[in-house]
Image (tube, rainbow, N blue to C red; front, side, top):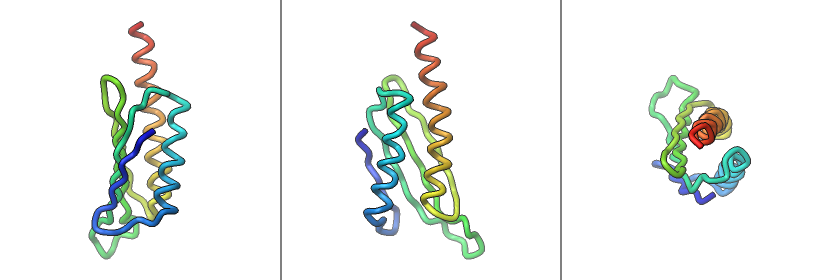
Length: 101
């Protein structure tokens, strides 16, 4: 799957980018027609909040787009939560497509 990863106002290291790519590639096992996606990594402002890492993931599929936004202490944890949300959405999308056939 072709991904565009954007880190807003900071530079993400290669290890984090690799981690995100590897995790999102696993979604292909649920629905192989995912054409691509965009990932936005952002640091929220606010001194008191420890959970200031925000991950937004948008996946493109024939006939639609699915989206997940998660916030956590680390980008890895936020990505894991977003993947779980996307996994459920992908399964639901696939069921919807197969029920129409």
